[in-house]
Length: 350
Ligand code: PEP
Ligand code: MN
Image (tube, rainbow, N blue to C red):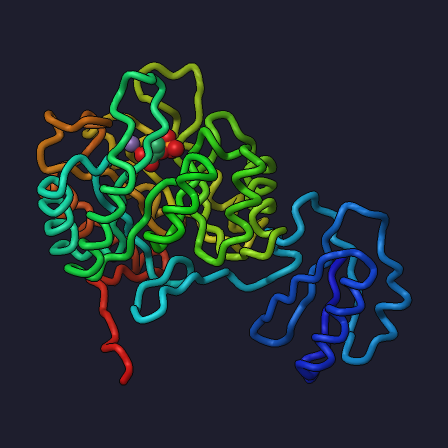
């Protein structure tokens, strides 16, 4: 159920409607829009009596939301969600494209800085790097953990890049939330509902990757888990799904982009690295992703991919990343987008 407030409704009226909803044992989610505020109602009890709600002051109308996902749906929020990073001009969603670049794993301070320096020089605003790695083999490199988070915090200080890194369980979630700017939840954890709920209780953006075989509805329901706990800053990421294809690691499903934009207000990035598993396929798919309306790209970059401890074959060289940025910059205006180059940090107040 969705309560649409009148355009002139006061903050007190919005507050009173939220309190009324919560008194009934439901959860109220005030969602401010450009014209007016809507209040989403969630809960797994019975339905709310709309007659009483309609009679509260400031209420314009009460609408039943038929989709399984409510807060992630465009029915509840018409405008695109734009996630901002205080103190910077970086954003995910909206007209500007967001580029997240960096190695699969943080392997050492030298490796991370060598790559960060180059992706920053090419104009990325976000740096990625795994500290906790969800590896298929228990014998493969599992990540440097806290040490990697510390290295990435230093990179943020040095280059201004905002940090994106993955949490694989509740223990790493607490650490990632403390050190990073965006919490990545990986494909293998897309339906780890307790992890999603915990991430929902935090107030940090969550980058949610599509599960290996997840449908669009399952993907949006996973986002709904995070949002249902009050964290509305969810970024979706298409990273390919498992098919019978044997020429690439996964199959990049670009057709999910218009479908997501139709059904949801959440931004969606594309990861051409995990989607293809092959360096030579990354740039073509990045170009196609932007042309298809993606809100940005998440890409693996390594200065010495032959020595990488994970995902070397799909990591592009820094020079290729620079080319990718130039190409995306040219494609962006064709689809009404803009590629900002570099991040601007506001001087600290006082
Ligand atoms: C990653 O981004 O390094 C990663 C492990 O991605 P995914 O969860 O999409 O496999
Ligand atoms: Mn990887």
